[in-house]
Length: 485
Image 1 (cartoon, rainbow, N blue to C red):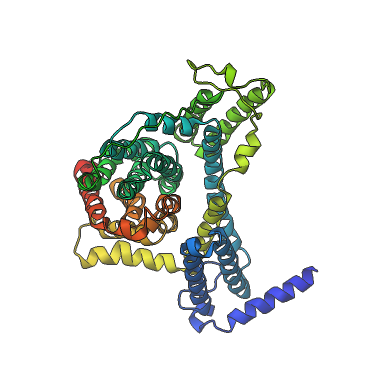
Image 2: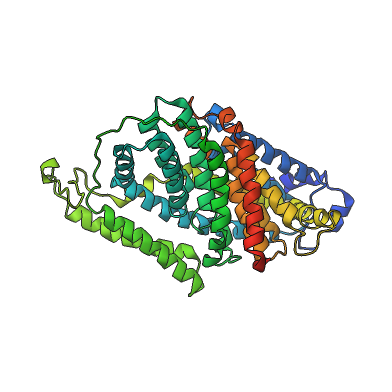
C-alpha cells in the first residue's frame, strides 16, 4: 500500500514538474521555492478565485460556503507539496501546513466557545426578552433607528456582529414591518453599527480576534479605536436620520421572560472573557485556553440546571420579579455546541489554508512588496505613513471580498508597521465591509431576514454616506492616536 502511494505521488509530482522552469528547479535547496511564475501557482490562483466566486454566490446557488474553499485548500496544498517532493523536500510543506492548522485551531476553539455561550443565552430567551422590551416601549421610528443602532454598536464587541445584527433586525421587523423605508434604513444602520462596534474590541470581529491572538496589539490597545469606530457609525447614521419616517409605530404588549439560569449564564460569559484575557495578558497562554476553561464553567452550570430540572414547572410558577420561567426541556450543553455555526467554522478552515497555500507559493510576498513598500515609495511617503495607502485599500477590498481572508493575508505578510498602522488596518478591515451589503456577514444575513425590504441596491444608495464615515474614522484615528504611529 505504501509503495503504491509513493508511486502515485511521484507520478502526480512529475505531472506538475513538467511545467517547472529551470530557475525554479535550480532554487530547490530544501527551503522556499518561488512558484509565482509557475503553472502550479497559476492553477492555485484560479482555484482560489473559483472557490471564492462560489462563496460569494451562496445566496443564489445555496451551496454552503465552506464546501468550495475546503476543496480548493486541499488541492492547492496537494499540488504545492507534489512540487516540493519532486525537489526532494518532503519536510517544508508539512511544517507550513501544521503552522496554518495551529492558527486555525486557536481561532476555532475560541469561536466555538463564544458561539456556545451565545446559543445558550439565546435558548434561555435573553435576546427575546430584550427584543420584547424594546417593542413594548412604543418608541418612534427615529428613536428606534438610533436605539437599535447604538445597541448594535455596544453589543457587537461582546457578541459577534452577525448575532447582534439579526437580533436588532428582529426588533425592526416586529415594530415596522409595514414601513418598508424604515426597515431598509434601519437595516443599513444596524449593519454599519455592528461592524463598527466590532472593530474596537478583540472579541467583536474575527479580524480583531486574529490580530489579538497574534500578540500584535494587546487587549487594551484595541480600545484606542473606540472613537474612530463611533465616528464611522454616527456619520452615516446622522445623514440617514433625516430620511427616517417621523411616524409612531403601534406598540405591542408582547412579554417574554428569561428562563431559569439566564442571568447566571450571562455572568459566566463575562467571567470567561476575563479568564481568556488574563491567560493571554498575564500568563502568555493563547486566549483560546481561557475560553475553553470558560466552557467548563458553562458545562458545570448546565449540569446543575439539568439535575434541578422539574417537568412540573409551568407558567403558574412564573416569578415576575425575577423574570424567570419554568423549563419544559432540560438544559443540554451539547445541544448548544451542536447549534454553533459549523459552516462558518469550516469556512474559516478553508480560507486560512487557501491563503496559507498562496503564501507558500510566494504571492503574499509579492503583494506585500507592492502594497506596503512600492505604493509608499511612489507617493513619496515617510516610513511612518508608507503603509497607510495599503491599509486603507484593505478596507475597500473588504467591501468586495470577505475581511477574513484579507486580514489573514496581511497577518501572513507581517509587514513592519507601527501599532498605529496595525490599528488602522484592523479598523479598515472591520468597517470597510459596511460599504456594500455583501461586504459583511451581517449584511448578507439581513438581506435574507428582511428580504425585499433591505436590498443590495437599497444599501448601495447610501454607500457614499457610509464611505464618508469610513474616511472620517480613518482621519479621526490618525488624529487622536497620533502617538502610536
